[in-house]
Each structure stands twice: as structure tokens, then as C-alpha cells.
View (cartoon, rainbow, N blue to C red):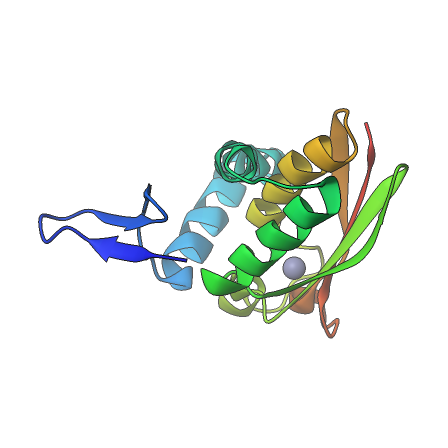
Length: 155
Ligand SMILES: [Zn+2]
């Protein structure tokens, strides 16, 4: 993993442009979108995750499982939490994330809040399952769970 700062305002990670952003910034954005749109906000955030996830997964090489493990390792390296690939089979994928910055910055919630991560994992699952996939966050640290848990299935 190579991080470069060109000294002219651009940071790249393995050649792809990134930016550092405080989790509180995203949590405030998320809450504002939720106020404006209600339940539809979650899908807007997931769409953002899918866009970034599609770029990230396109750059991965190796077998399906290797790619899934590389993306999980990358998630940890860029501060999205400690990812673990719990299960990967033809009919689904389960990923857990400890210390999700999205859950920590959001604060207590009665519903899952890690929609950006969910979107990224939908892009990954579409690749690993070989067909469009949907992901449900079945447990979230913002709801008091020890870790966030994402279950992917073919859509
Ligand atoms: Zn979560």
C-alpha cells in the first residue's frame, strides 16, 4: 500500500486519488440527508459506497477469495474499521467490521448506519458472487452490537 502526497493538494493510494476526511463530517452529512429524505437516505449513501467500491474492486487481482481478502485488508488500511471475511460461498458472503468509524461518529441508533460500507460490499459481492448482489447490515455497532455485520446475497 503506497500513499503519495504530490505537494500540490493531491493524495493518492496505490495511484488512485483519495482524501482524508473526519468521520464526523460524514456523520453530519448522513444526518442532514436523513432529515431531508428519511429512509431513502440510506440508499443514497449506499450508492456512494457502490461507486467507490466498484473502482476499488476493479483494481484487484487474483481469485475471488483473494480479491475479497485484499479489499477487506484495504478497508482496514484506510481506516474503515477492522474487516474480516467470515464466509464466502457461491450463494453469499458475510463480512464483519469492528470499530466502524461511521458507527462511532454517528452515535447510538435504532437502525444500522454504515451504508457507505454496505455499498462498497455490494460492489465487492457482485464480483465475488458473479452476479448482482444486495447486502444487508444485520448488526451495527451504532445499535450496540460488538461489530457491524454485513450479509450479501445474490439480488
Ligand atoms: Zn455499522
